[in-house]
Image: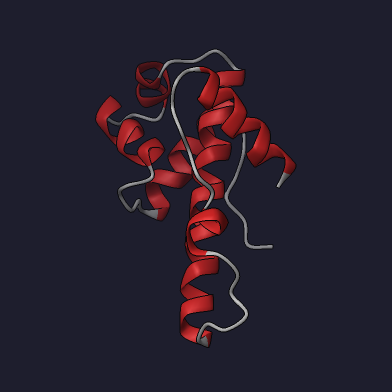
Length: 106
């Protein structure tokens, strides 16, 4: 959670206001099991997207460079990083390969 606060602060310095899902939806105590499952899946997805973007920025790569190395259009990388679109396992594996990572279940 500390990383998310740091990330929010950095974005706010750039004039971008970001709220965590927790800030928007609040505590899960009184929610249904299905809602909790869906909520947790979405949090995991958004965390993964944030990690992918942060890794790209840390390595000082552009979306275009990542896309070229992953053999996909830049628009796919942009859509993935936006968090507004779903992505396939194949796309995730190709992006991971660019960074010398692999997709595993833990």
